[in-house]
Image 1 (cartoon, rainbow, N blue to C red):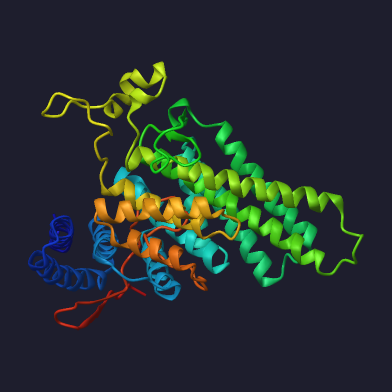
Image 2: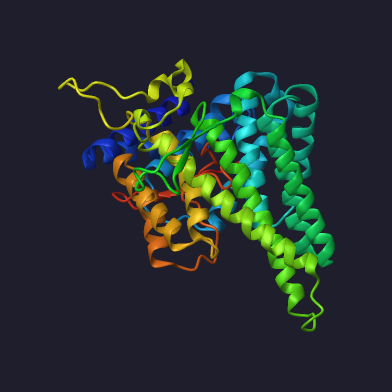
Length: 422
């Protein structure tokens, strides 16, 4: 293993340990190791040969993971944008060569998905270099992958946002039609998924603290849940674009001349936002605190696929009330969807308060400080002028692995930066 990669692996391990056991001494060791790893990675990035290696890109991803684990403050959009610009340079430099190995392909997918998310946030087009590489990979390597097919839809979503901002698409009806087309593509994506991507809905009228609106979902794993929540956030954003355009049109139309079609679309958008927000909440219990399955009459729940959810016998011989904890990784994937659902003006107080409660649970039980921060923002009902990166993914379509641009250690107060090759 290359030295810069082993150094950051060690730093992430120390940071995780310090986070779990709240050890300031171990955290100081992690910071020093992190600074060392950052210096080594900067040195590697000065050489094109080293910069294009899988180990270097993986090191950059892990540097970002370290930041995610240890961060206790909001990261502004400008910083996120700097990260993404560096990622674009690095991925482009690696070219088609990176697509020839399984690891290289996976890292390319994660990095380019982050780039797409950033483009949606900034309302700019996805760089041609990135779309060309993605097209090559999709046509020659991963044609049948549901995750790749979905992220292709998000590329078109980014183009819609960019074309509205730059004025190339300005007609209200044309914008609404384009948004509805992308929404239809997202719905169509759900109809072509393999059976292993489907989820089961469990209905119950107990544990209202754990379960919102009397039901929750069971997924094959947290990555499938993550993809579904990506879809839900995408449909929420599209519905808000549609309703925003209609409300803009209302302001310029005389009273009594407002089309009934617009009224229907407004109601449909509101219904979609409500449904998607509720489904995001339904994805939470399985990966935080899941109600005991024996409260549920479901024969399928006893199948091997869900055996991990069955109540376990404690030392007393009695059944525990909840399934064992899943781990912090699934908690990170829930932060952004929950924050989006809880921050919507359309969200009822009951949903927002439930989300605040769950974010606090994730923060305290999984030692994820960003969850506490997100809960506090929702409680204060702050107006968010910028997109903030509480976890290192926007729509949640990838793991949290964008490259780190700058870090400042609390004990040394020295700034370091990654210098990407030109």
